[in-house]
Picture 1 (cartoon, rainbow, N blue to C red):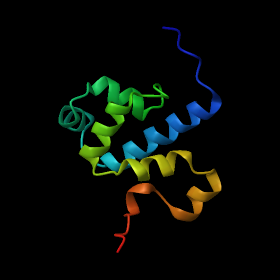
Picture 2 (picture 1 turned 30 degrees about the vertical axis):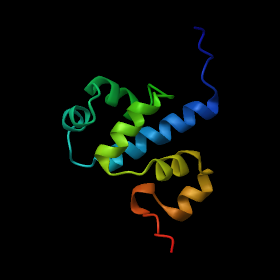
Picture 3 (picture 1 turned 45 degrees about the vertical axis):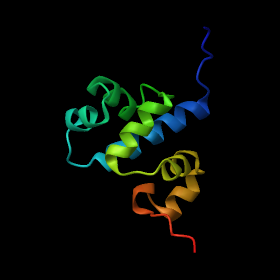
Length: 100
């Protein structure tokens, strides 16, 4: 299988994803989060540092679940225009409202 090179947009999304996961992890160690998510600590380290710009969906979903992040919030943050992030703040501070 041939893998296409990452675009600059892919690299930027990967950088934002890594930053979001680092913030959400807080004081927890990479080892603890990785083990809870059943991914290798090195994989999580590479994602957090932006060295893996397009991690596999199951990996992102597992880490997000361990960190208490909704996938909707993660996607919204990593795809938001830069000026929107300055106005709204990080995704982990936003909670979806219940719809009645």
